[in-house]
Image 1 (cartoon, rainbow, N blue to C red):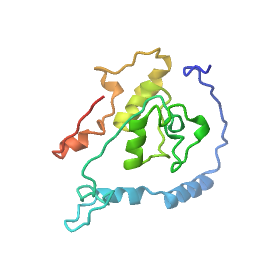
Image 2: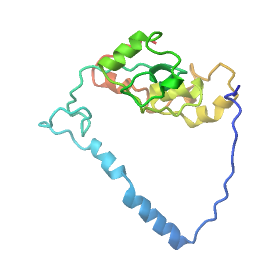
Image 3: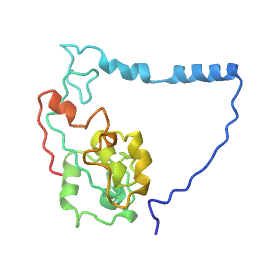
Image 4: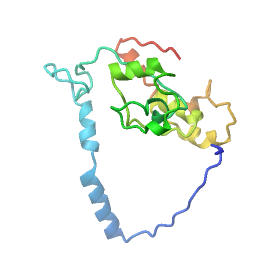
Length: 181
C-alpha cells in the first residue's frame, strides 16, 4: 500500500542561458500571459451589464441564485461517478455507484456534473485548505509532511490564507450561506 507521507523527489539542473536569451524568454512569457485579461474583472461594474453565469467584472449580475458546493473527501470522481455515461469517467473504477450513492447521482443528473474538476491537495491536511480557501499557505505546504492525523489548524494564523475563506466574499456582500460540514 502507498503511504502518503513518503514522497519521491527529483532534482533538475538547469543551465542559465545568457542575458539576451533570458530577455527574449521573458518577452515571450509576457506576450502569452493572460494576466491583463484576468485583471479586467477588477474594472468598475457596468450598471447595464447583462446577467451571465460568470460575470465579467466584480459586482455585475450573475444568473445563479444559489450555489451548492459538495465535497466528497477522499474519493475520486471515478469511484463515485464513473458509472454516469454523460461524464468523462471510467466505469471500471466505480466503487460507490448509483446503488450506494443515489442522492449524489440524483444531484449530478439534475444540476451539474463536474467531471473535470481537480484539486491540488495531497492529503486531508492541505486538501481542506484547497477546498475551503482555494489556496494553501507556504507554512502548511512545508509542515503537513509530518502529520499523522492532526493538523496545525485551530488558532495558528500561519495555517490560514490571508485572503480568507471562499465564503468570506459572500458574507462581505450581505449574502448568506450555510455550512453543513
